[in-house]
Length: 248
Image (cartoon, rainbow, N blue to C red):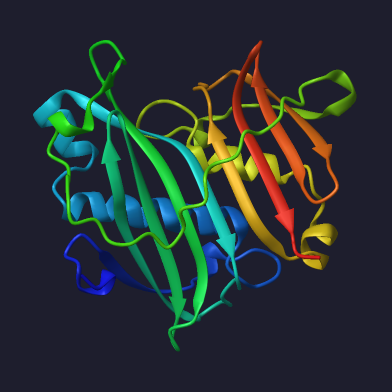
């Protein structure tokens, strides 16, 4: 079956608005992750398996654990794009969901892969995807199936960058810090001049814990040959990891 004919594919048209650009007047890095996450949420609603349905039907909720994005080009302010999202597998306790952004000429702008699982609201233990109302077959061909990487441990005083207290505006409906807020915070290890001069090529993030309003997050950074690693710690817990690569 041709992927674009598969009814599991959810496609939505966008115009890149001023709310989604950064100082380069293009789709921002964190904003790109936000659009990917938002399109996934809408695709789950179209498949009758979003967070609202799962709370009512299974007393459960979705947790997104990893995201990888490969950037070909970041679209400009007011540019028209299409975003297509679809599950590519479901086995055991996890599913992987791909997204592809294209420009008005059909050229690929970015591809993304997200890993997710479902937890019980009662005890926060994972539930088997096969026992839930979720697609089990006829998955489209993936557009990004590279394995997620193991991000090295970097937390040490020599890699400490800054700390920040979590404020109410960073909290989502789960009463925890929103996933995209971790990315925004992690990107603050770079100054704006660097981000203006260097084009992002690849972003991978792992959400490894939860944090709440009033807690203090410590941000760590280590540069490698071809990438920058960022980790965020709350007390003694690592709650977020990021690996970002820029075009050479």
